Length: 411
Ligand code: NIG
Ligand code: FE
Image (cartoon, rainbow, N blue to C red; front, side):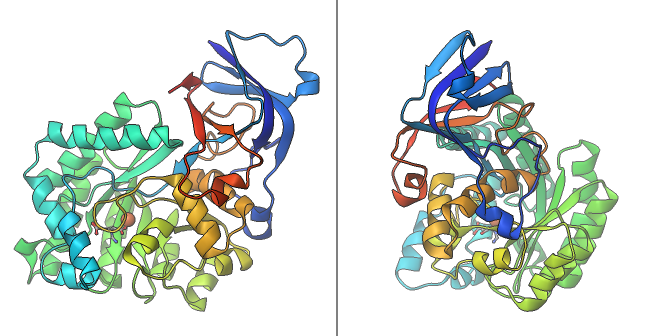
């Protein structure tokens, strides 16, 4: 099967060489071809170029993209889309004045979702998650990371990871699984945090590793959740079992979690709504990428990650949704890109780099995803007719996507 996309008004994120991350100043550059074509064979981008060089090319299907923009699909490197039910009551409670912290302190929040998930069958959980995944693919997501963390018992955490595995098997997009057993302290361990970390380290991590269910190890490193010492124990155990750290840090408080992540060669440190100069210096001495989650800031009305400061310090930045029932009930990467421009003051070029190639880096898959490059996966968004690519972030809330191609097939 081959597809030829012709007359593309703007072909974004074209990379002659297989760049796998863009940092600092380079994030301002989004390489683009006007009046271009892309030729796809099976699941791979085989060729692209100017329409002037497209003469005589044939394919099983030709898509005329006159007036339209083509770009790589979004790479969403931080989600919790396997969850059960919703938290609409807490949404209303927050509107009525309670904070995210207040709700967690009275036993709601993550513990609320954990209770619902523990009482949901594996098939039901799969069905709920697959609906969300189907929706986000239509919104242009072509690679995604999914975390556990609403189980909080061995059985329920493994149930979540098996659901992720089943999604991975049944969906065409790239899915990376993460074990986030240390997401909140379950009620049964209310006065025994060490006991819970023992369980995570001695049982949950080995069980997930035995069945090869997680590539990454995550911890919610935050006041009221897990401190540096807890985080270090979990990261060490994850690493011993072949998992790479990818952690939640600095969502509400900055107290050294970034440097700890860097010490353990975390692939990414995510959230960073609170960030100080020590954190920035730690990142400058690492291969760890910062991941910002602007939809979470929007939904919780908390500060936005200082993406401008991160990029201006010469660092790479990725953008992701954080899709979850509590802090971000949305998996729309188009909104994320737009919000990063409007609220974090990223340029459209920086935001698109952060949501494509750098998102792929934050999942360890940027050798095959995140740019238009010969030999990479044919995962593409074709927009409706648009004046130019600035309309993607500018016309916030609009759905500019007309067609999504995953592995060389139209969805
Ligand atoms: O990334 N902050 C920790 N975990 C999720 C939210 C969890 C929840 O509220 O259900 C997040 O925002
Ligand atoms: Fe998260």
